[in-house]
Length: 286
Image 1 (cartoon, one colour):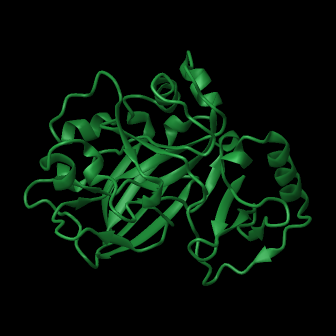
Image 2 (cartoon, rainbow, N blue to C red):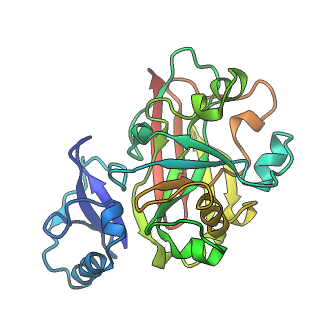
């Protein structure tokens, strides 16, 4: 299924994108698309049955309707750094021996087409198209990558917007460059895990002002999705609705020759992952 949250910021309601490409209102069946839904197989089954029959799912007029982030009430967002061989090579870094972790606050989340704010004083705001993993069941001390995949509830498209000066040149952790306002656009929809049997075969692309910048595939990941979930579960408990952003392929501004084409006000970023939809953001000053 493709699950969405639509409507004004702070007042999104649950929806479904049906096989014909029409939006359907899920408000009569569920209150939100969140961890509680993903963890409840009986409710998910009712949604699937309703989607198949078309019953109780009024159509929504898509024109002019804002699409929000497809996951509500996110507990935590865990980022994986340098997780593509191509990206590590383009910035002259050795592939890490273990996954590099950082955290993004849930209040950085934006809808897939919302405006993204370039922080005040920023000169190195960068793009990162990423596969996002939404946890579907509580994960603690998993023993295998297969178990890791079994705890995935769904997949989403994420732009892990990053300010490289804040991240790398200002000391301390990466978090300074990862947690600026609006720096985590997610969506347009969450695709349930049953529709993505192999997350390591997905094309990932991103354009800036119409120019293709990233053109990769999740097969290039150093640590695949199942291993990432297993690894994280050794250090933290993963709960339903938590989001893991699994790294970006080559093609970011930081990896380009000087002068590096960091984002400026007025730039338009578009990105997509096959089966997970497409985003479009206009960047402006905060």
